[in-house]
Length: 168
Image (cartoon, rainbow, N blue to C red):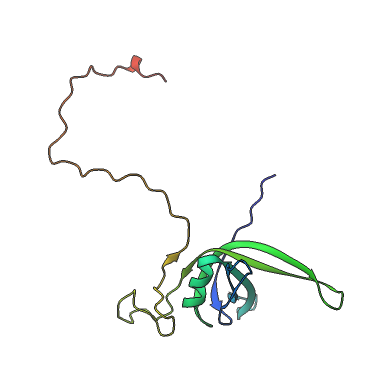
């Protein structure tokens, strides 16, 4: 049976990212994300619900998120769900679902038409570029092709193709 564990979320941070380090000196960034859902109820009245999601990131990506994001800033994340389970000090079993961040994009929170350079830092981000993908595996691209020459390719004398030459 096939399996898939993939999450895409866009929302605002509910608190400043918390950067810490594992004993192996691997950076870990924990943050909360609020994702809003808006719709019209059967009575035509607008409705809204907010879902709060705990997220965690590791490595250089964790340092980048901690450096450029602050409470209230929008972000798009891509990741996977992970269920953490433990036993509390009072003996009760506890669990929580978190998103392990595998990729992200900063979202520009400045109003449209605000002017200025799109790579300029926004008010409190410390220089975060707007809407820039970060720390995703690089896409493989085809090798660069030489520019087409101005001259047409030389004519080749080839026999004409007949219907009998086509195998289908």
